[in-house]
Length: 335
Ligand SMILES: NC(=O)c1ccc[n+]([C@@H]2O[C@H](COP(=O)([O-])OP(=O)(O)OC[C@H]3O[C@@H](n4cnc5c(N)ncnc54)[C@H](OP(=O)(O)O)[C@@H]3O)[C@@H](O)[C@H]2O)c1
Image 1 (tube, rainbow, N blue to C red):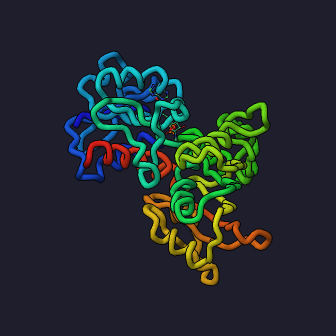
Image 2: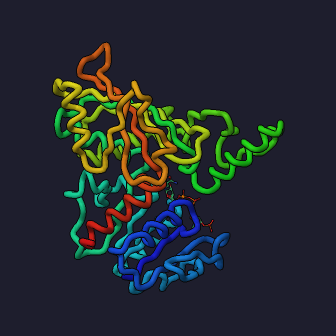
């Protein structure tokens, strides 16, 4: 296969390369790496070879079977349709095409039945990272008990804002520990060190942020449940990697704790970590570098017996982005 990674020097791009390297099922004849002016000319290693990052050009996707895009909306908007014209499947991490009615938004454990046929190259959208981990847990609960309402508060790490986010938290933390609060905030609206920011992406006129709207709308699309009553508050926390979510889920049917645990324990891609008396529950540092979505603190709410409360954690760069894209490619090409 000839595979392209657009945004190769970014956090998600590098994760794509690392996962491709670790998997024997992808027979990569050629790996093409693309970036913007800052990273063009840099080299990255793949299976012992150095590959230099090139600028995007008209013939970038000639002969390519798959292009993984992780370079933001503008790059996807400009180049993904061109890649498709060249006969290439695009797996796109940006939010550019996710809500288009003709574009599939896929989490392989959840809605693989909505995957397009391999015969016609097209764009397949990779969902928002917080929506991926949420739907991996909600899907088995939806099948077993039906979903009436979902309320979630997210605790999202700075890697969700790319390499700039990681750098900003590092610099500001080191600065503050040395008594210097002057490191400017360029990626985030305020200093992220030792702070929680209830603000991810721009604000919409309705008071929600675009991140919150993405999580709500994409969750409904992935679960094919337009009438799902869902509300989200998205918070950026001073953690480096892994997103956590406190989630209140109201079922349509009554369930016992044993049934809920059984459904989640048997769900693909889900690991239940739920033993509070031994301090066992999911933690973002433990989830970092792992493929699965972790769920714990599973409890029946006190005021509403059909509402269940839980804590959902996953690696946003891995399952929330690159790994999910690789899993889509595996299903698409039966590899
Ligand atoms: N990080 C996450 O957890 C996560 C999760 C889900 C989805 N996503 C999405 O994935 C995409 C990448 O995110 P990231 O976290 O990897 O960001 P990042 O670390 O900032 O990396 C973005 C990369 O894209 C490259 N780029 C920017 N504009 C480009 C252009 N016009 N042409 C070619 N390359 C271009 C940049 O190149 P230079 O290095 O040359 O500047 C950079 O390497 C975004 O759309 C993001 O929303 C991220």
